[in-house]
Image (tube, rainbow, N blue to C red; front, side):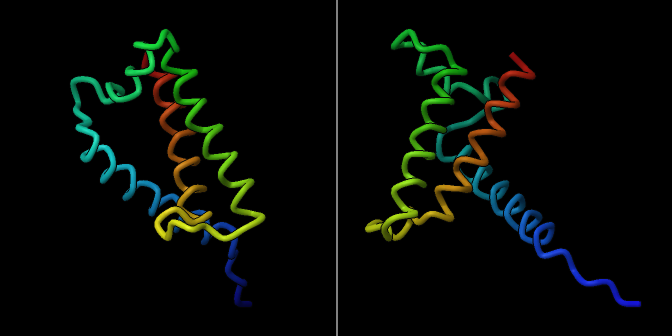
Length: 102
């Protein structure tokens, strides 16, 4: 008996792979290093915002944008709902990593 593919798991696998590709590219663009891979996120401490809260603010920005994009199409082509969802996934992974390694 042939089993039917699980489209949810296939979509999640493709999403996670694409998220990782994006994270690698953005980490390079933002000057991420092995010395301090969270350096870009530590900038929030200049405004006395803890790193965790700074990452959460970025996540909230993405959630707000997703809510808006569910009602209307994006005017900026590179910032469609799919891209914003992937950014949110990456910020959640960044926060998870930061909390684990701080």
